Structure formats: structure tokens, C-alpha cells
Length: 544
Image (cartoon, rainbow, N blue to C red; front, side, top):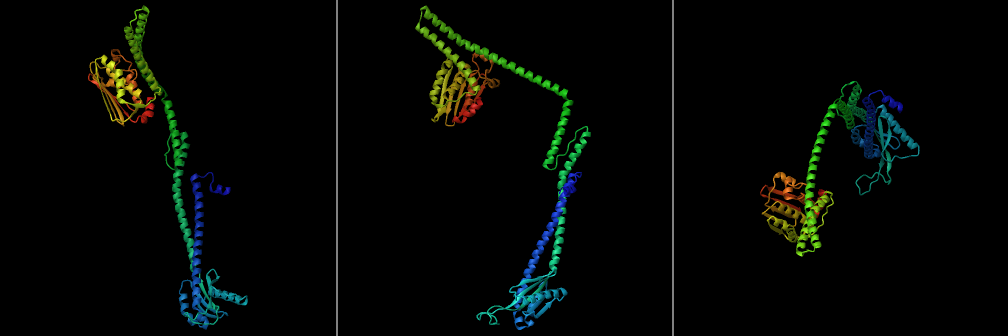
């Protein structure tokens, strides 16, 4: 086997030719075997049909020959003989009595036919001289390369009186009168076998050639790209510039071509990178320098904002702290000096309490912002009564509103459906918005509007204060920044109220929007979708 493979697939022959040679041998062998097998099956089927036809003709002729043998007259079967000889391939008909006498001998009388008849007569004599074996059914009696001899017994049968027919004997069992022999030629069968073999071989060879042609074309799609790739790889050493191979053929060949082209691209890129290394380094230095300058400027700007915030915070924290310490000291001196006046002492302590509340509010703002940025702020929902919550908000901010001679009005619209909300955070948002409006409004109008239905909660705070331009509106929700840094000096505050309100609103699934014009006041409003539980997880992600 190894020697045969070495002969068919010599190692020094091209891959494509080896495949074609091996496949050609296989296809032609398969074609020859298929042709012979098909011819054999066809010939066998044709012979079986010829045998079936001969058996039927012989049996039919025997049935029509009863009277001829019974009366010893061939004239009674002349018409049947003529009809039988008219069938294709029927060469000879003979009719013999049981004792071997030839009653009828019609058809071809050639030497081959005579030989076949002699064989038939000899077989009859052997049967009579032997064990007297009687042929009781139509059989294929003998067969040569050119002929097939069929034999059928001619039997005498008794018919009942009620049936139509001739009563020829009183014997109840069938009586053997003789034998009818028909010889059929196999010339057409042999010619058909030869023709079938030749046709099958011819068709198989043509199909094999067509298959090999198609296979050669298909194989060239594999071998041609491989050959081109091999040639290009052999010549690549002598080339100064890298080349590329066409990506075609089967997927595996395409992958090899792409890999080769990628390798060439890598080599080209390496050479280009080496040639332009100095320019690339210089460009990288410029880019890095520019990035460092931008980062430095951003850091300086952030430092300025943080410094301004710290300076503002130190002032804001120091003012209530000084008030707490100052009024506390005054109360202590009055108590020690013995000039303790209850009314004056209560007034001073009220001032201490207010300053402490203000200081606590600023500290809470800073802590709330830190908690929100750390993603640790959570909602604590409860059933909310809007009118009661609005009164609490009004009581909280009313002193600040009145301190600047502002008027306040509120409008609560609800459909009566229960409101499931975080009351603390909602109150904190409204207080921050109203405090911001009161801070920048003097002798004006501040309006709180709340609308509630089962789908959403809408809140808005409108004022007639100083208003903002578009640039200022972009900065008011950023931490440590107010609309204008001068507002810190003129109006005070840490700049964290609106930032915290925006973050809390986002936590509950909403967003604060602003509409404002310089000198015409501002409107800050937000809408929170309900039910609130659907927005809690999203809000936490946004807050973090």
C-alpha cells in the first residue's frame, strides 16, 4: 500500500497534480465498477423477464395442445403454433408424446436448435429409463449461451358434467399426454447486455471526465492561491519592498493569505515606524506637553474653585459660630454678674439657636453631598400628606422670605390618590428651592406650586428676583459654584443647595429644570414619575 501511494503521490510532484492523479484513478475505477455492476443488474432483469415470458408462452401452448396429443393430430394446434412463433425471440416449437414420439416440430432447424432438441430428448429418455419422474409444471428445461429451452407437461383433465368442455377420460387424476417444448433465442439478450455494458462504460467515462474537469476547476481555486502564496514567499527574500497576495480561494487559503498580508503590514509598519521614529517622538512630546498644560490649567482652575469655596465656607461657618460663641458668652457674663434678665437671656439664647440651626444646615449640606457622591444615599419612603408637608416647608422658609419683604403664595392641586414618597428628601428639595428664591428676591413675589396625580408629582418655585443669563443657568447645579462668584459675596451661601436638590431629585427619578431671564426672575421646577419604587434603583446608580 505504501509503495502504491508512493507511486501515485511522489513527493517531488506538485500538490495539485498529486490530488488530480489520485482522484482520477479513483473516479475511473468507480466508473468502471459502476458500469459493469449496472450492466449485470440490467442483464439479469432482462433475462428474468425473458424467462417469465418463455414460461407463460410454454404453459399457454401446452394448454392448447391437449387435443392434438389426445387425437395424435398436429392439425389441431396449427393456429396456436403460428401465434406462438410470431412472438419475438421464439425460435422453435416441438410437441412430443409421452413415449417420445415427435408430433410437431416447427421453427428454426439450425444445428444449435437440433442440439437443443437432442438434449431435450436425451433428458426425456433418462427420465423414462430412470425413476419415472414426471414433469408436472412448466420449467426452464435447459439453457445454453444462445438459447433457452422451456418444457411444459400436456395434461388431460376430467371436467364435471355441469361445466362446459369435453369429457375425454374417466380418470379422475390428470393424465400426462406428452410435453410441449419452446426454444427462445438469447441473441437479443446478449446484444442488449453488450450494448448496456458499452453504453454504461461510455456514460461513466464521460461523467468521470466531466467530474474531473469540474474538480480540476474547483481544485485550481485551492492550488492557484497556494502556488501564488508559495511563489511570493520564495521571492520575498530578494525583494526590497514587501508585496501582498490576493485574498481568494477557500476560507482556509484566505486566512493564510490574510495572515501573510498582515505579516507584511507589520513589517511595513515596523520599517515606517523606525524611519519616522524621531518625528513620532517629537509629536508625542508635543501632545504630552499640551495634555500636561491642559491638566495643569484644569487643576489650577479647580484649585481656585476649591479655594474660593473654602474661603466662603470658612466665612459662612465662622459667622454663625461667632454668633453662638458671642451670645453664649453674653449670657454667661449676665449670669455671673448677677444682672440676669430672663427676657434678654431668652432672646440671646434664641439667637444662639438660630445660628446653631443655620450652622447645622450648612454642615448637613456638606455631609449630604458627600453621601450622595459616595452612592450611599437611600430613599426612605412613607405616605405623604401634601398639604401638611407644604405647611412645614412654608414655616421653615417664611422667616427668610419675610426678612427681605417678599410675599409668598402656594397652590396645591391633587387628585386625592395616596402619595408614596420620601418626605424628608422632598421637603429638603422644596426648602432649598424656596431658600434660593428668597435669597435672590427682594420686595417681590415667591410662588410654590404642587400638582399631584397617580402618575407623577410636579413641583415648581417661581420668583421675581434678579434672574440669570444662559451661562449662569449652566453652572447653578454644579457643586461649589454659584451662578456668579460675586453672588457669594453679595448674597452668601455655600453653592451646595441646588446641587443637592438636583442629586436628590435624580435619586427619585426626576430632574430639576430652570427657566430664567436677567431682571425678570426665575422658575425652577421638577417632575417625579410615580410610583417612586420604579425609579429608586436607577436613581441610586445615577447618584453614585
